[in-house]
Amino acid sequence: MKNIKRIAAWVRRNPEVSVLLLIVLTVVVVGVLAGSHSDLLAAAIVPGVAGGSHVTDEPLTTDITREAAPGLLLNEIDRQVVKIRPMATPVDQLSRYAQRKHAGSMIVDYYNVDTKPTSAELSEAYEAPETMNEGASPTATLVVSNPEVFDRSDTILVQGVYGFEPGGTQRSTRELVLYVTGRDANGLTVLAANGRRIGGVEGCVPSIPAGTQLVRMGRAATELDVMSPQFEALPSKAQNYCQIFKMQVEQSTLQRLANKEVAWTMTDHEEAAIYDMRLGMEKSFLFGVKGRLWDSEKKENVMLTGGIWHQAGKTFTYNEELDNDQVVDLMREAFTGNKGSKRKVLIGGSRLIGMFNKLDYTRVVSSGTAVTKWGIDFTEVRSKFGTLYLVLSETFDEVGMDTCGMVIDPEYLQKYVHVPFNVESLSLKSSGLRNTDALVLTEASCLVLRYPGAHMRIVQR
Image (cartoon, rainbow, N blue to C red; front, side):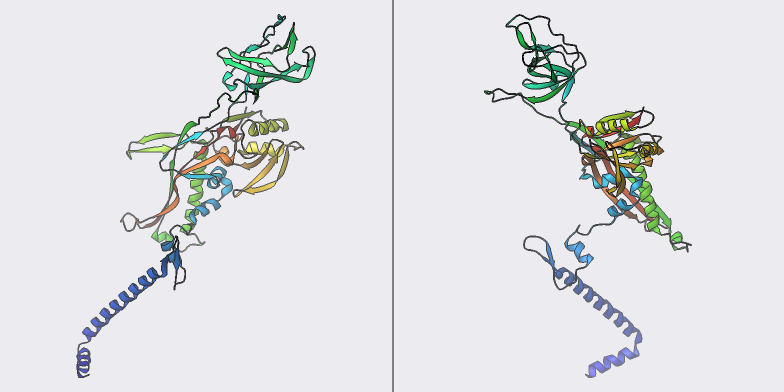
């Protein structure tokens, strides 16, 4: 007790020592508290028996969630991008809802498998003989534009050429049907299922004019057949480059601190930058040309992505003014012969969309109500072939193609992403460059059409 009193009296006589002791004591207490807090945080997370984590004796916070379950909490940036003026960039908007795959490289190789053609054209007219001796073979050899479309045992429908009734003397109301017995360099060897009688020979192939369409139907096997001509499909390889899209937002510290007549913050700068960035990406995704350029100043390659306009497998050409008949032809071309979806998107320039608005729709082609899908407001146009979702794209106007458009099948629109859309803060102050706040928006990606035949360009004649 006496010793304690002596120490206290000595401290009173030396006040600078008491201040030093107080600082030391504070540092020790803070360290103990910090250590205990980290211990509690670590102790609050208990690994599960078969995966996952459990939090005990602590309220669940975002810090604990990010530590225990990395990636569970979603960043807002991708949703923010989707919400920023989606009507102005329909292709980019669709791509953010379409199938997305991570690309491990800036160069993307992908494969397409198309369907086997179902028809070919007769290259040379077939003239049936005037007479045939009894017992002669009724087979005929046809020269076609693409004989590989057909194989032995295939049946063929001959468009516009009618067969004969049983007996082979009277014309039928049914079109001529052929059976393929062989294929060689000279063409197809065929028999007629409903052919004519020439001399004493029945089932002969009648005359067929050049240019006639031969449509492949199902195969017909015999009772003892256990095998059939082989059928295999090999995909074709295609390639595209991911392009690095960047946009930088920067304002000085004094600009940020200055009084403003309206609230205008860094968030507003960021939103405007995202919108401008998406407008540029829209044009690249549509009309970009795949290429690799050497920047002599930066001593680096610049990779440019190829647009989907050049990837589409079909082109529809219309006259100066789009009318109902041409709309029917457009719908037929868009939905037939490609085995694609029955609901597709048509994006077009202002003049093309204006022509659709001027049409007097009928029961064959009708205009439905507005439809909202993928965050975009569409006008629905229905026909017996399928349904088109129409939307204006001012991108076509900006590149001088206001009379053009494109039909896209969203089911076969694929986006490859090497670097997902992200926002990075630059430390320009700490690096001694500039006294500014800076953000950099980045995405490295490309679009591909996995089934080119399901997509179509629309151009004016």
